[in-house]
Structure formats: structure tokens, C-alpha cells
Image (cartoon, rainbow, N blue to C red):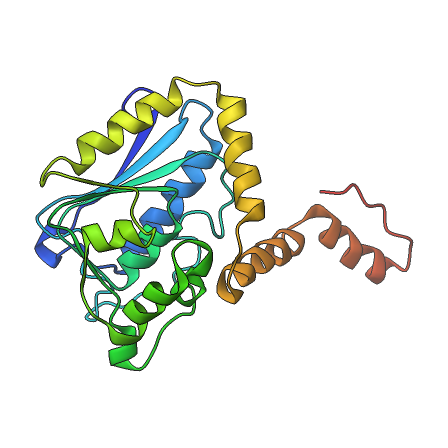
Length: 238
């Protein structure tokens, strides 16, 4: 924590911050902690080393990214910012897409190579609510590297700053936001997310979250017990 700002750092610089199961689990736990921590009013994501992230670690591939991406499986109405320095590839582009505010250095580059590899998870393809459709689709279908200034032009990036200053700028913005009224800030994000168009994969995250909550609820356990005992269920709505 840095005052009211929670800082989440990708710290595998020797692996170019590639996503392995441990990183997926770390992000999942970070979003749960952030959402539950009343003292944390904003979050900034950053990375150690010259590469923001090389995407998936193909020597140690996660079984699932469920819960690892912001604003998906773990509901959160507090702002999530990301500071991008260097190359941002594949899975890391999905992270950037799903964050609320993106600060990129002038030397940052974004590439989503899945079209050249023959597989994608579906989340990035639902990009149209978060950046312009035609240039965004061209970027996805070609797998080309996109410089930070172009990413800003099409809406993937909020601001482009001098190399090496993305984290400082993100923290400055986070502190400005957290100085404002928390209830107002949170309601603004919550309403904005409700009105934002969502792709099928993002909708599936929300559906899975709802189903999972029912599966682990007291009411479900009570319903099974009532069936076994041949009696009416006594449900509590939790």
C-alpha cells in the first residue's frame, strides 16, 4: 500500500513477466484483497524490468485465467490504473484492456499475436466497448506491434508520457482520484461499467461468477438437505 493506493507489481523480470500459474493466482488474490480492503481506494498495476509482460509463459502455461483480469470475475467498483513501460504482449494486452485508466511510456509497444498462433481466449475480441472498432480490429487481425501514441489514438491508452515515468504519472492520478469522495468515485465507475458494451467472454465471466456464488451458497446446501430430508427448504438468501 502507498497510502490509499494499492500497488500490484508483476515481478518476474527474468522471465519478461510472462504469466504462469503463480502470476495468475497472484492477480486473483490481489483483486479479491483490493475489492475487500476499505482502506484501498485505487490500485495501480506496474511491472519490474524493461518489459511490461511477454504474455503467457509457454513453458509454464496457466490452466485458466479466471479471476486474474481486473473487472471480470472479481467485481470491483474502485478504479484500477496500469502503468506500461516496454513491450506489452498477448495476455498482458487483455490486462491493459480491462483496466480503467492506462498510462503508457512513449516507448511502450502493444502486440496481440494470437491470430498468428491460431488460438485466443475470446476476451480481447470483445474490445469494441473499450477502443475504436476498425483500427482495433486491424490491430488484432494482423498481430502488428502498435506504438503507444497509436494506442492512445484508438482509445486503449489514456496518456503517453516520457519513458520511465508511467508509474509516477499513474500514482499521481491515483492520488488525485483518492482525494475525491469515495462514494462518488465508486458509483461513477459502477455506472460506467454497467453502460459499457461487453463481449461474450466478459459476459461469461459475469455469468460464471453468479453461478459460482449460487453453487457455494448456504441456500444451495439447504436445498440439497431439504430434498434429502423430504421437507420444504428454509432459504435465507445467502
